[in-house]
Amino acid sequence: MKYYSFLTVLFSVVSFSIYSFAGEGQKTIAIPVDTEIKDVAALQKKNGWLLKAKSEFGINYGHNSNVVGQPDGTTLLLNLGIESGFDMKSGSHQWRGNLLISETFTQTPLIDEFINSQDSLKIDTMYLYYLVNMFGVYGRAGADMPLFAHYDYQAAPVDYSITQRDGTVNRRTDKKVQLTEPFSPLNLYAGAGPFSRVLSQKYANAEIMLGVGMKKTIVDGGDLVVNDNSDTPERELTEMSDVMQFGGESIIKFWGELSDGRILYSAQSVLMYPIYADPDPSKSNLSGMEILSVDLTAKAEFKIFSFMYLGYEMRAVREPLLVDMWQVQNNIVLKISFAGEKFIETN
Image 1 (cartoon, rainbow, N blue to C red):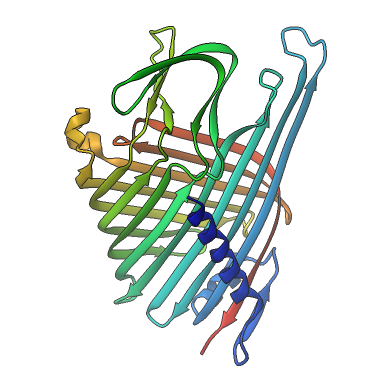
Image 2 (cartoon, rainbow, N blue to C red):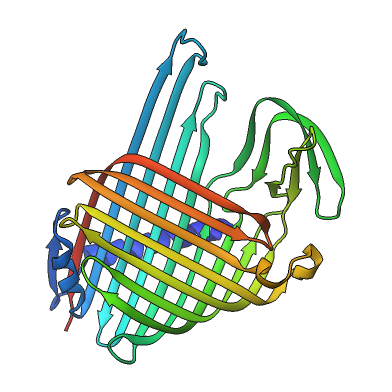
């Protein structure tokens, strides 16, 4: 798994090397943080590299002492984010790449440890070839994974029932059980097919892609998922298995900005219906649309100052062959952000 962390570092080095060392004969235009998007969009229509980097930090602190009905102690939330990427255009060719790290750590009086409540590392790249102005073909590849090990925390000891892959059930009583190793589960994906850029405006952009894709989910041996039955006194955990899928995929992206760049938004839907899957879905009594994989994301940023914004992020994932339940995350946080963009024009 450490191999994939090396890829992350390599991606960052390459991105910032391009950013820092523009060759002679190229025109470099530095774009301030608060530049209006219309200027950036105009640059993207030219041949060249648009390079982006962003870091953000958010914190929330609270403390109770002798408050009726509330536990004494400190509540602390830390949010960290790093984003970098590029968008290269040369004639009918376009190449995009992104690296995104998002982390949230929480500490409460009930559990005296920092809990990693949001943990995501994502690397992706996409190539677009425009056959005509609005239509073309795409190819994409990427990986996403957590950075850290994750645990199931409880305020008091509970009885756990852990079902292994071979059906063996182990039982233990504890306040904390490790669920996953660092960089696990690892999701690798790729796809290709036709696409259409149906909207291209400052306030609204939209792309639709329909193609074939594959997805491989790799879990370390012993990785667990909470699959608790509320009707039983025990807390149930189940060991996960690797999953391989190949089939049709659809991707819909929608993004834009309003109020002269003070409001930014984006949304994406990724659906995949496997025509081949390992393990066989029938072994889990899944069929028809029950095996459809869904990944929905939405994001909005409301700029307060050039360095501060209120952000909302939502992600809803359903991977029935891995975990047959919806996994949903919602986050609202006030963040301090430092960002920059740079355009390197090529002939």
